[in-house]
Length: 340
Image (tube, rainbow, N blue to C red; front, side, top):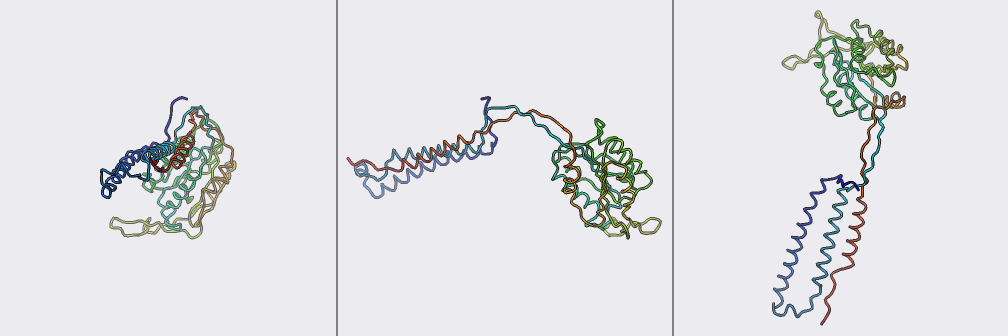
């Protein structure tokens, strides 16, 4: 036995019940004696055969208190007998490349393309099975918002902070975003077990995205592209001025309309082995389901191996003792004084 660990220290607070109950029983005991003295002359009290045995009542109370004590100890989940255990964590490297350009504010998806994309990523993260994840956001330039990590809480925090203001330069440079992910988000230890999920409306401004996709293929990275937006009619880009009035973005005096460029995204995935294009357009997508079908079922690598000390929980022993004490208290009962 290498020491005892209590796995639920919050249950320590219930130990206050023991002294509180002791005080309660003492008070009840004394109140009972005072009540008897109101009806019986104090000089005759010791000559009357009172129904309950004080000695047995004391034993019963002690047994009940001890039973409660062992129940509280069991709830603390005591553990000992340390045994080393090696944990192997397997998964893939998964980087989300998210378009945060102004066109992602178009509301052909509710509330807009960007918020719908963020919601889909959150749903996907909830269903991950030990994969490392990272986040790259882009518009006219790109930044690594979250490097590859197993800390999903940190990833969610970074994702929540994403907006069209996350990138300083306007525009849409998909090719540069792919290259940023290759250079700074993924590591180059091995050319497999890597996926890049690109979420965008596909409009690109001469950043050579297909060439960037070929570079990803050479690095052993599969691209899963998700196209958002109306592919045929397009949608205007809403903007809100300083006084809260909603208007639409203009260029050279004309309103800007944004359409989904599905052709570019299809060309990109076609040059990567196993690449997949998902045409969401103005519909819905369950990115968690996509993860299970395309990623969770794919080959995985060992991401980390960790040896930890495992303590065997022994709360069952304390529960058995508590039960025995409780049964003993019931068997003792209040008892009767012997007549003499």
